[in-house]
Length: 109
Image 1 (cartoon, rainbow, N blue to C red):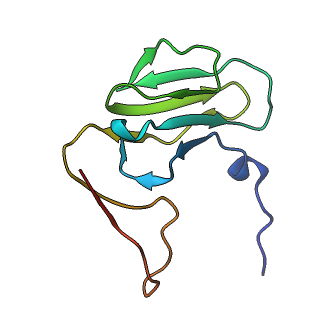
Image 2 (image 1 turned 45 degrees about the vertical axis):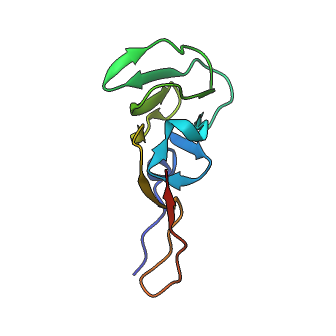
């Protein structure tokens, strides 16, 4: 048998992180970009679960540590992204592969 692709399942808000390493750290000048299906419509940002003052912009550079989300009128709330401000952090690529793949790690301080 087969299952049709549910349009609702594919239509989700994405929160993109640049540079693409996890966990993100403030001192990397991290840019968060909120993407939905439509280019129009206001983006609402949340930091640590609270509505936060970057209304309307689809992207910004993070200056404080915290857990971020964005909300788009067309596709809803994004997954969370955590941005740290630690002195030493072990990072992995945001798009890590499968078990058995070679992965480059960053130890950053």
